[in-house]
Image (cartoon, rainbow, N blue to C red):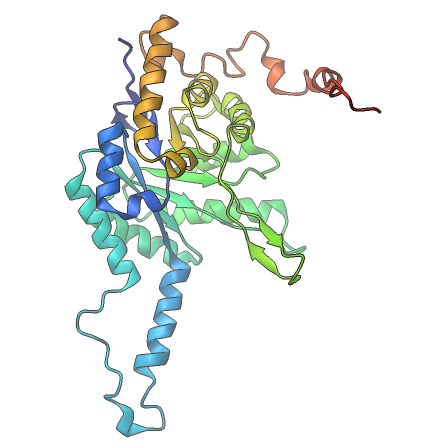
Length: 337
């Protein structure tokens, strides 16, 4: 039987399957089901600084500003004694997860300000997180902001958090950097212990009846993992930090391809939302069976064995197959060109 263990950010894990940040972590029972099904660690749903700011503004408007110009209204809307804030609920839930689970719990932080990134990262460390994933969800929409400034924004967030917490830090990256390998090395020098490839930026849609822009949630499919495999393969062996894939991991084939390309762990989300925590056990069983059938003794033996540095044709991850792929398309039966 193959050894499924792996290492991520210096943390020893029993296998490479880690549920990513999602609503599945919001309920203790569901988190326990994930652990029972074989999850090696758990990434919590994100703590959003924007939600904290919105809550603070709402409290100020409805409770703390009632007496402005009306002294007799001072006691009309007192803050309830049993009121707990969004931040407090998140930190309490993190503590509860740590008490209920034996697997590592990775907190996810989505900040907006320099002070917020540092303050909330510090609180997450105090609450008992085993590691921290920084989810920098940023769309550079200003014509006055060049690519250097965008990269610097990420580096400044990382450096500030690194100076204030001792936890392992994973940087969740956008897929849109122009020179990812160079930037990855800069993040490594800045203190990142892992890189997560890639953040799925949910795309807005246009309602043709109302002509309004609306948010649209679409779950991933296995095709999305191919883009990530390419960059895993290019980065493996060229950076020292751990590598994780998130987006498009649905079955054991996606897991195996990710490991061969160079991933240390594979995050899973969409397939768990669609099929429930039991899906993890199925993927683990199929992974173990494939390893045994192909005579691998461990996951570590296969990790990165088909990365760009180790592949028989390393150019296949670059431009070499471009024309060959385009020329391979066959006209569908019955379609006239």
